[in-house]
Image (cartoon, rainbow, N blue to C red; front, side, top):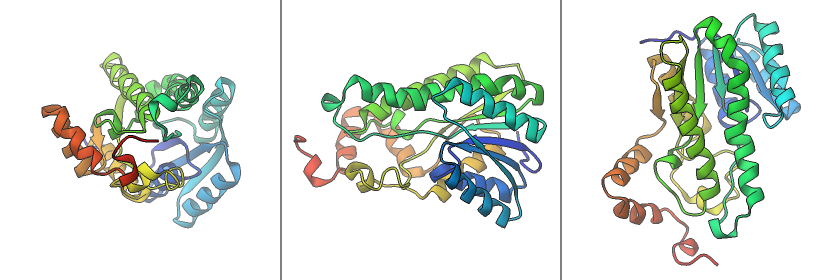
Length: 262
């Protein structure tokens, strides 16, 4: 099933930076009409100016995905401004690099609150409008849900949860005219990861490369998609032999992390 994005009313969270910003620019090039949301209104404004500079149409909406009222206001404002929602994209997320046994419950709560519950809140608010438009929901998990990686366990738990939520929702919405696309990006070099040694040392792609892959998956009508070949290959290795997968994964770690982490 091919999906034409021209003229589609698209709402996305996390539009102030990274993948979200790159997606806004890529979607503008496809002719989509955009509403982008995030907490940082100044940086949102910068994204909007760049979209308009490409000839696109874009409004900005303040939103904190960890707050129910903020999410509902954002979705209602998007509908009022755009007239409908054809595509809703859950892009907002945070990461954490820390050994699991050094993590604390608050670390888990913080990432689950944004990555999982933020996705849930936005989906719940947007779903009635997606049903009206027979639209598309895009949720961003991570390749780390298929290829475990040392020192990213808290983040992995949150993204495993997003993948489970998204896949299960896809099944529950079967026959209800809403398509769900779950995306499994590889590590993306955004400002969130450049200061974290494990992430910074790992094979990665730019936000622009990731955005292009996501848009291709949307246009092709996919229900699941990776954004890079190497991580997809490694996930296949893990499926066949987790032991070999572990050995390969550790080759990408900084040398100081390959033994016991102090």
